[in-house]
Amino acid sequence: MKIWRGDSDPSSTRKLKYSVSNGECLYSNLINAGNPLAFQQSEFSNLLQQHVNPGWKKTHFLSFSKNKKIAEKYAIGNSSKTLNGTNKPDWDSLIAEIDLSAIKFVRKITSSISCYQFEEFTKNHCCYNLIPRGAVSMIASMISISNGNKAGGPNIRNIIAIDVYEAFVQIQKNGKFIDSTAINNSKLDEEVLIFPADPLNGQLGNTAGLDMGCLSQIDFFKFV
Image (cartoon, rainbow, N blue to C red; front, side):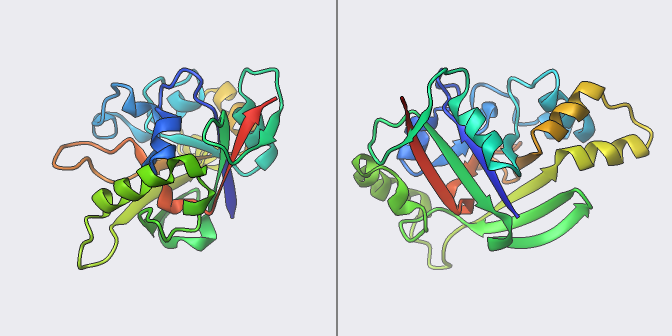
């Protein structure tokens, strides 16, 4: 199954242009002074519902959709303009694709929640040359640092994928209340949440970064 994320981050909350242009990560809102211990301190179903409605400003999740047209809507955001593909460094928005069938399936937690693994982003990754060329020299240096040239090979990253509507249905069957607006929104957006499941380096809590090694495609756009 393929899923897509549209993003423009106009207020630079997630440092989108900088992080992607440097081959780092797609960051969740957790990067903006969020609580990395939220998953240890709160019930999972509450955090899931909070993300969808009313909205979790410091969310650990990154929203994707099973419908690329919906991702395009989020790539445009509040702009009244349209998207025009570009390969130049001054891009305005992107659509990132994850092909879940192309990365390693580890196990199912429930029928709607699955764990995956993949090798972290390197210059050999399929998306490396898709990043606008003005940033490639910076990317090369970043990758040599993040990989560390370990003899054991590339680092392995972990994510959890959640089919939100199906998860809400299961949670309701177990007797827990889920707000109807959250259910309807997740169904309309055909939403799949990705949770970067790696710990912070040397610290408690979870990382805010979705390593780009999970991406099967990334497209950049200018607003016109």
